[in-house]
Length: 433
Ligand code: UD1
Image 1 (cartoon, helix red, strand yellow):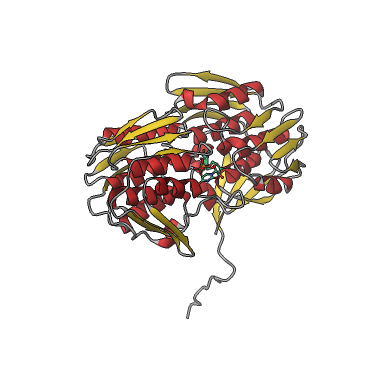
Image 2: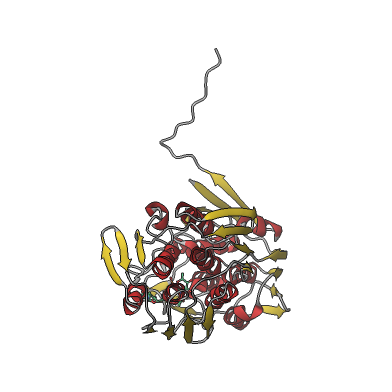
């Protein structure tokens, strides 16, 4: 069990490169299992969710070769449906994409319950299973997980999502790529990672139109071919460092970004008093560290991302004036506020709204990462706090932040990782005879 140690109060300055986007890399990696030819993916982030995905793919028969730390070759020729390892599947949410892949390629799927960060009573997959049923599969949910079959293969269909779900849009695209006829997704998610998945699949010979709009049409093809593809930069990783420098003050340039994807984050930081200079593939964030309160309402893309809400929550604690967060995507995504409370800050909550009185001081303390982005919020809170903050459960943060410590140190932060031995494992020292 490790912990992160942060000594707060340092301004951040310098330049760092943003890694590939976890939420684009995971569906693209699973999509490789639709393909009997090898695909080479570049700009794959070194994060634990990618490691888990590669493990699942290898255990299911894919040949996985790391060509460099951020380049992976996947050959799905020997991929087998229904053979994914339950333990790994149950640790990430993206493993649900195996259902679309397996049904689309083999007309059969069996997977354990996918895991991932827990917010909301449960993170449902009913849109996914309903869509597969519209496409002709019989789906069953049991104590073991999900089972589905379409002995004649899937068929084309029109699926209108109740909500523009990222996961369901991905899963339907994966299921439809090799399905005869035209599948239409109405009220589709428009996130950049949806466009990236479509671009990757189209480069492999798929015919997907309209990704990035709310109607996606997939004309099925009989097979895919291999390709080289570069994953887009991670807008949430970029947004997290933007929040960090906004709070500490300083001047930080982020390279390897797509500024267009950051519009809602830039707009909110600007409203809070931060200067953001945009280049073609870089941005520079300049902050005095004196922030104004703001109201944030999460929404589907291009609205304000739910995955940035906790990081802004850390900023709203110290900003001058009232701040409000309305979380509209997930119930119960405020667990991180219980941890921030240990740092001497009071936030009022009711349902999915939180009120930050602002102008408070964060005091270093021992806190936990409650989930991936909640953990990122604690890192930012630690950077802004007086004294030392110790964050337990950093494995949540490892899921989505490539070289967090190295990047923050490059910017001048005091941050370290400490290995803590479990009490049940006494360290024995052999006596000299
Ligand atoms: C969501 C976020 C994504 C973020 C991820 C992890 C949105 C639209 N999606 O993606 O940006 O990276 O969480 O934080 O912001 N829903 C159902 N049934 C389903 C699927 C979804 O009711 O079968 C509901 C969910 O309860 C939720 C909403 O739809 O309220 C959006 O869910 P979805 O986009 O599918 O979640 P993720 O793909 O995990």
